[in-house]
Length: 316
Image 1 (cartoon, helix red, strand yellow):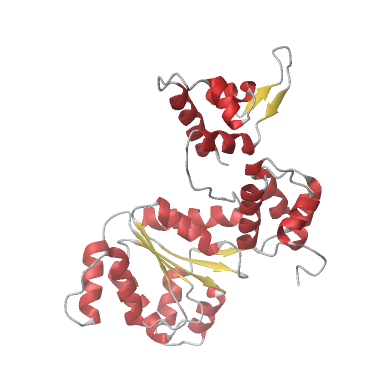
Image 2: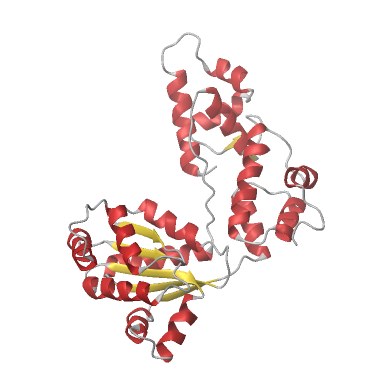
């Protein structure tokens, strides 16, 4: 549970207690939620730690399960989102922010699937009203890309000509601080690159444009060296700002566990052994929170093994 969610819980339980209903009090909330008064009092004060007694000098971290129990007791509902504060996520957001603010071009490449590229790009677009995110497919043609951008921008097509539709896109979206992010571009067709080049020409120095895909840096550089149609120009415009994301490491798994309250060392080692990419790590940590922590159950090597049915063959 992140700090914003904890703040929402604190505000919600204070509002619940202070509503003026005679049946609502801190003691009653403790009985309903089965959370001790000293912890409830600390959370009401916006604290994430508590002291076992007035004479104690040691502060104890309030586990997420207490926040979840209190949230449920007062009827607070929110989506739990697992966010990894890792280098890949930061690099993606830094480049997107730079491209958006300075109207620059950029390439985001991942050495392997599951490096968190798509997750980070989608998160950036959700948090920025002036950013649009487009996910391409291997079957997509240039006209399909134009149609998809128009759908995201909610533009009604005028006529049937693609060039007219491109004019509509540029007229609507060319405003300071805007950025277009096109993902999953590896192995795209020549027709797709023709349209991307047209978009790039029409928006150059006017908005930001980010291209992303697995192995995209090598793919674009190779196409430019071989002098494939339009590719030298595309490579020249984008090559100066590029990021290559790294694969998940054992230390990444352990750090993510610590960040999200999974501190048992055997559990961390177990996940480091079996988790192969950021997407899988996201699912495992979220399930541990949903199925164990939020229910006040023990998070141990045995309970996690049982939850995910992990054995010596699980990572094959």
